[in-house]
Amino acid sequence: MGFLSAWPETLSSHEKRVVEELVNGKDCATQLQILFHNSSENGGPLSAQELVHKILTSFDHSISLLTRAESVEVSQNQAASDYDSPCCKKRPVTKEKRGCYKRRKAEQTRTVASATVEDGHAWRKYGQKQILNSEHPRGYFRCTRKYDQGCKATKQVQRMDDGSQMYQITYIGTHTCRPDSFKAPQIIKDSESWRSYKMLTFGDSNIPSNTTAVKQEANEETTETTTTTSGLTDMDSVIMWKDILGADYGDVVSNVYSNTEITSQSLELDLVTKPVEFEVDFEFDESEFV
DNA sequence: CACATTTGACCTGT
DNA sequence: ACAGGTCAAATGTG
Image (tube, rainbow, N blue to C red):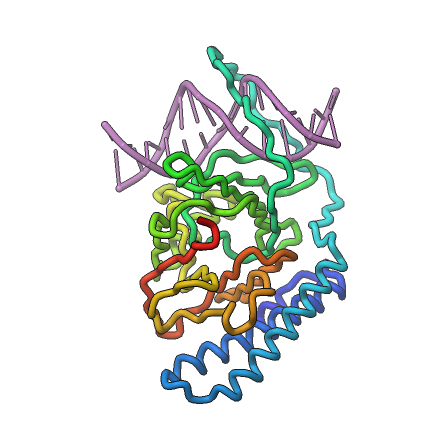
């Protein structure tokens, strides 16, 4: 709620509708979560169904709205932000194949908008670039398992220019690393870590230089589970969204900031929930990627 | 010391 | 030619 009122005027009515829909969906999801939590013995499947239906509708609307709009891509009209990199000190460049690589052709990509860059995977930053007409630099991340397991997943994170705290995150490729090799995201109770990360990476404000970014992949006060249709263990606090919603929904994200995560593809289903009281040992079932 | 981040250089696609 | 994506040396951190 404060979220909506805090949303900048720059949003089009279309975008506002999308946000409303997503927030609505989020609220329903939250209720559902509480419901599940309170009724550990299958009590209340009926109301749960209703909620699920509402969630479905809500996200359905959002997705169709977004895919219609297609270009939610940050229409930054202002220029400025010159790329005046202090690239004056040339190194004794003895490079063999510096910067030599094969650019990947149109892999599976999905772009989401989120208030957090955390997604439960362990990423390592390998680059940052100032993007033309964008206020904020874009960060380039690869899966930490790139070399041990050849995981090709990468992501690009860029803070939106609309003044919100949202980040546009583009995931490229899917994780091919093994589930058990995922670094379980820590539940960071103190919000400093996350704040520091944001500050460090995207230069929010005064930054305590005592944090290592990216390692702290877990968002404050959020737990995240990435689930697939197969084989989750008996973690009773993990909600199997795919089972509930069917596999046709993309990412669904909800967190303390009421962030929205939107995607036009449904590669996997992520759920970020505020741990009402859940304490979950994270487990990632990425079997569909293996 | 090992691993992560930073950042200028360099490469590719348009 | 330019913008953007990746590499890798330098640097930071625990």
